[in-house]
Image 1 (cartoon, rainbow, N blue to C red):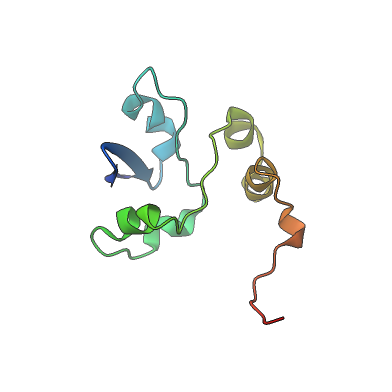
Image 2: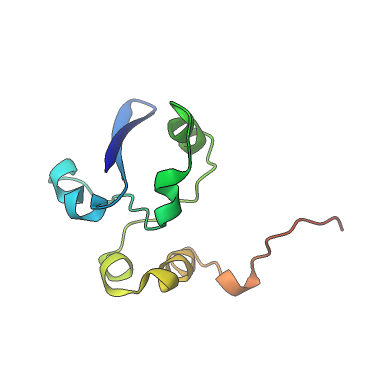
Length: 103
């Protein structure tokens, strides 16, 4: 597991990546924390990011983030979490396309 510090505006946030990360979340969160980022896709660990790349991508809004919900993180199987997280934003996963086009 790796812990990265992501600096956003005047705050810094720890981002845990890798095996065992979800078991360590509570250790990094202050009691006043209202949300957390949990990445469940195992391929993220081997993504080969350059130093500072993740922090840069988060600052550029390249990641879609949602409020952490215990029911999604701990009660759903991994293959259902993405759709449930998108649904919490009002997005129907079935209507997304993986190709771009021109109208």
